[in-house]
Image (tube, rainbow, N blue to C red; front, side, top):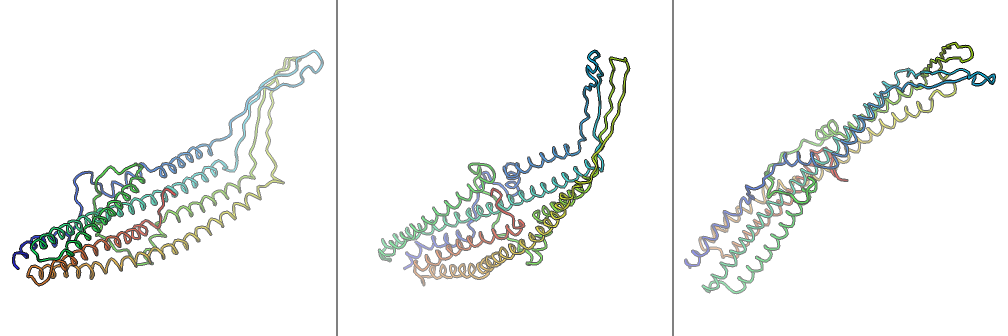
Length: 415
């Protein structure tokens, strides 16, 4: 009769309005993705490690350009030759002159080594950014999942309350109450699972920021705003042209080429000169002296090192080519997973969720007009909520693939 409909129509309006946009809200500790990225780059030990390596190479660069130190000492000859005189004593000074611009080539090699290290730093930073973005979207989805689960608990609790009222009015059976209580327990389990997922996502994100716990309540952002990626070939071009992995390998090729130049000039002999000044105690004469010399590159012309350096260039070039093929294979797998996830998310957006929402609206209208019982309304509401929970999990997988491709297939910063 009309009294029973009046009791539950108020609850029906609450259901229909509350589960459409369950977005978590908080004004405390809200942090953007950009802020999280900045903190990660500033605090992550993997980034600090490679930065320290680069600084050590700068010291190596300074050392590579330093010429040999001069030499100085005391010289003596004809000491006690006739059993009477003290002989000749004096001092000498000399140094080695590096020829063939060896020092310049050595510095050039280290400069290329620094460039390679800087590209490795870019790799580490990109891996870190990809990890942070994936953990960020995991947490963003987890927040919405908790919000949706809380709404499901409210729906189930209202179902219990209404079922008990209907039972008291002798318009529902005891089984309806029991069924609604079972649904409430199931909803409570779903909520606890969602909270566990959110806690795990917070801890994983905190680990990348160098913190034991994430000192914020919610991260801000809209997980439903997804920008579609370019087609496969365009994505591959972007990955190859922007990949620090490829850049690091080409920097390694350049380093090997400079090393070959350094090995080629190695046979050019350095010149060593020395001057001396001695005093002859027998004749009271001051005797100056001078000598100059250099090795003769006949047997050792550094031919082995030159041969090695040439083939190291070939090996480095092949590694760069192999990396391009590897990136294409990895992108093919990631892009396939992305398309699969996108198909499912698009299906939820275009068909499944709108139809579930339309069904809920029709059932709610029928219930208000007394044509549909409460359990049918509850089923429609629960179905709509569960569809949204499934949609969020599919959206999570889509974001992970999306971020991986945008991150140039680089992740695993702590591995």
